[in-house]
Length: 143
Image 1 (cartoon, rainbow, N blue to C red):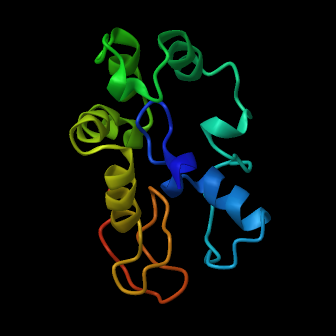
Image 2 (cartoon, rainbow, N blue to C red):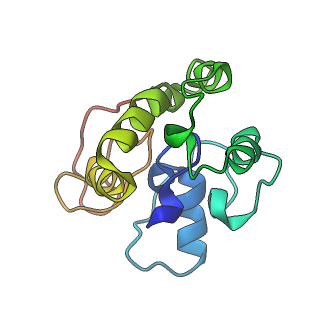
């Protein structure tokens, strides 16, 4: 489950690219979902799919598992990332503070709960407002 922690503090378990990856890898618990963006499957930071990521490079240089444990957190790079055009990036600063407070495993458990359908427990992605498994609806967190 630690593969769902991005070094920048995103929860990859709610990323539509990770959902596509997991579905392609035969995860039978995944629902069929609509992807609105031009996503391609991604296995997360630990998969090596994006070795040029500035957060991967920086965490390797600092010897940290994620930005939460860096002595320079919050740095200008993570602040800028949290303010870019992707609405779900706004959560990274709070996520990283929470990781530092409760630890990675507890944070991952919280995130799994947060990004699951409240009715049936199916995984959902950041921009989803209706469960493809049971039809339950909720207010979309991001537009």
